[in-house]
Image (cartoon, rainbow, N blue to C red):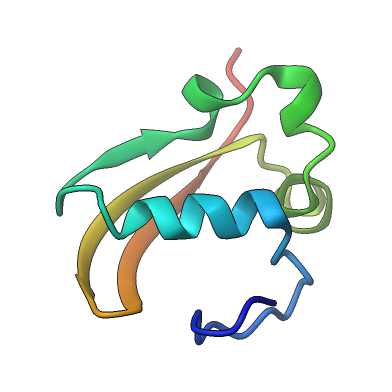
Length: 86
């Protein structure tokens, strides 16, 4: 995990791509909403650690996140797991 991002990495999800996303979150306005289905191609998404190690075992397919706030290198966002679309 990169230094400066004080986030426990229990699932070993701190990949270079996820760290780039985390860095980008600093620059997004509060209230920004993102859905993984709109940002990732299906073939790429199902290979990510967050999908394979967290969402898929729980029976979910995608996630919806909303940025709440940030201060310096710390930020708050809320996320919801979503089932596969019919």
